[in-house]
Length: 268
Length: 103
Image (cartoon, rainbow over all chains, first blue to last red):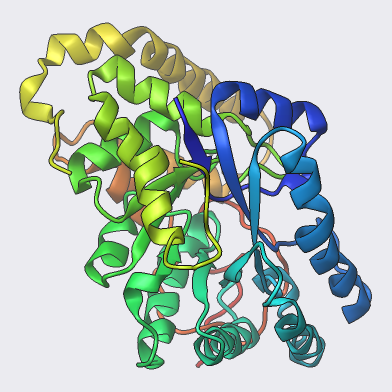
């Protein structure tokens, strides 16, 4: 089975993880910029992080036959200081021509604050100015429903943004319908303790359909599983889903959405 | 791509065959957790109070249980909050422990 993990933070993962993913059939990953688990002390820290995402990580992935792509932004967990956040945003255009950059992400909301929303709007505008795809993080747990609504409204306010070029990630049963109805793509993240399990992701596919939807591990430094995508495929297979349907959500759909960027090319 | 698997082309027995033992164990884990919580000292934790409400949804016989439990445990307000006082989430909503919505 060939698959794409369209959301995983490989800077937090080991070389063994790359090896295991390659053995499981992973051919490409896309890595959004995110929170390091601590607040960076200066915009220069982000500059170095963006270099890691655009120079170092593609080499680590290539050593295992995996194509590495990335998304750049300041994440919502570090967006509460708008002056700092805007200094980081000013760095991003210098990296947008790097060969593995697909767009702006993972932007979004964390605690649904006014400052987070303002920085989200700035980064939506940045994507618009540079004609970039958008990958959106939705908040955790009790904040997700409200945050998803605020995010969809913010994207709709920028009428130049094509909803078909936006993926709203970390959807669950209470948010997936709103995202799909808005004409955007939906991502399901498979986590051991929060977000979706493989069983619930398969349920969502059965109930809401398999159009404009993908699954990802969002593997990072927290409780997560870099093999979550092939394990979800196994869950679908044991329920009797056809191989073509499994490939649709683990390969074809990510390829279709990501392929809207001319930079997303993987060997056929 | 059309669905090849729907709820209509599998039986309830097939679903139980695949998942019953796993969810029997999870149910016992929840029961033991509530016993453990109730044996401990102090007031009811707000998260556990919401878990008890969620448990009622499990047995009400209506569909969309997962969606309704997620909604139960969600912040129902609509306006952004004035300022994020923390980065984390608790998993349950309580106005006294969540930043107040901007007026």
